[in-house]
Length: 230
Image 1: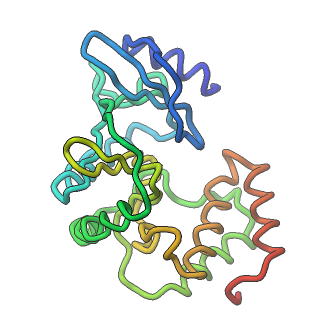
Image 2: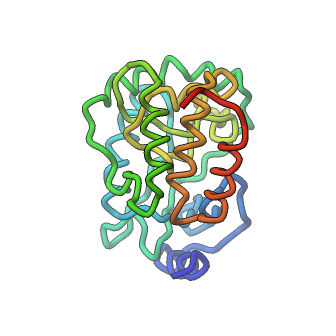
């Protein structure tokens, strides 16, 4: 099933009409849509219903920690992605800066502390289709990082995923949320070489099946450039 088919089927399930595409979707399509209830953001997703259901209590904790996330809508049939499309309220706001991202760090640390015992997100593991050499390199990259222990992370804390809203800063797009090392939520300009190396290697592994050409190109780029010792 292609994402275009998912989009048409999902929009039909939700009973919404598309207003315009929205920026920000790397591995999915994102649209501003409208229904009689108001405006929403519709996104195609590869996540299972179990993975989306895992996210709901995470978003509840994130709200209590002051991150003001949008919450997924539940369809009339109890699913969060009928036809492969999720729906969440549209949050009007202004673009954020890296300074705003830094301001969110204390709230993210509260989130990490509150969710340290949460199990892994369904489907987040690295598939066996990833070549052994890349899995070994990824394990070594994790091994070079000191504590703290793994917890739930947002996984993509950048200005494009932060909005300045009437209610304050809002951290949006929790598609990459998972159980992982909290260093992933450190702003990229302040990440160490070891964390950046880990981020790239995980990107290779996670994209090996869904974006094989991109994953292989990135793997060659990592191999060709100097970095932390293996």
